[in-house]
Length: 151
Image 1 (tube, one colour):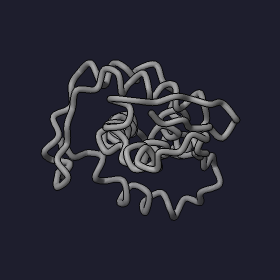
Image 2 (cartoon, one colour):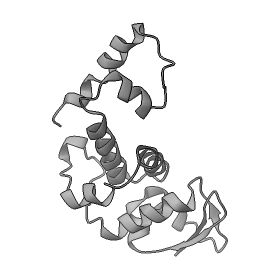
Image 3 (tube, one colour):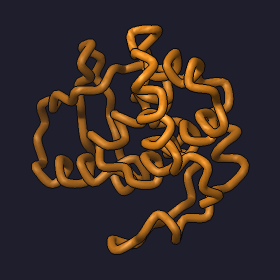
């Protein structure tokens, strides 16, 4: 069992599948500490991650590549109601927790949402508003060409 404390001070008791999905949790559990260990994730985001861990049946090898992953419709559906900001927070948290499948999934969902969007919508999505000058529109479009990939 692992006791962690979120950035907003909420304590969580984790065990079993929760520990095996996140490499950070797995390594922290080896410390055998009886005191809560602080993590830099909010309780709201951690609750969503824990709920997802309970239904996540994916097992990625240590040497996986993103092309090896076969996403399931139910995994996409789990996060369908999330705002873009929440997805970015989930993406950041899964990276911090070293939860590879969730990181790949949230990146894929964000990429799908960004795909084929005009520059103005992408500006809003990434929080840039109209601060970007027109000359950089082409640069943004070139940098985000990978979104058109079917992979």
